Image 1 (cartoon, each protein chain N blue to C red):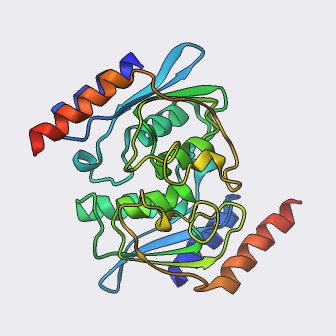
Image 2: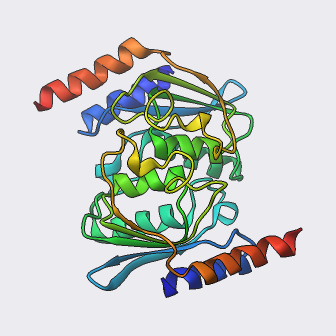
Length: 142
Length: 142
């Protein structure tokens, strides 16, 4: 999660909403990414999507069955769906997102009967630092 | 939708689940793509995600506010989330997907209070051909 938090801090520096993610396999970081939809002109370029795509490319497979995903914010529906498609084993996330989250809020995607894979889910990991980054970012922009 | 159906047929030829998508702006096709998670080693490479990413890159913006999306199958949660993030104006889809769809099934994402943008939605467009492609694909593989 330290690496995901560093990616989130880098996103803030770049003027993007500060969210970062890392994919880990067997204790090693396979891929890490910052949220970057504006810089990349890509509405799908959330940190989770970017890290999952990079990890899948690095491992040469569209399934990341033994991988864990660390992300500083509760995933949205798009990212929760991608986590299920990638068959991520364990999801660790930082701050909860009542406005856009899809794990413990809104669609609670992993509890839906149409969700084909449910990772183990651990929320609140590094929550204080992840939340402080987000609050600082939005405070500066008000 | 004809272009999306052609992309779906190409996906089947490539051994991928036959789904195709196209992004249209002002009556012109900006981007079109086939489902290709296996070929690209990318669990996020659904037709919708690919077409949205291509269109955003072509238009140089992470929002596709005046664009419509045509896709041969009801979008999943990942793709519905991406459609909302991209601010797609109108969504036209073919076959319904009771097992993995997230528009009229499962999370019904666009009806969630955490969904920040709801496109106009039109289902059943080109449904017969879209469904026939999918049924033919899975029949061959049984």
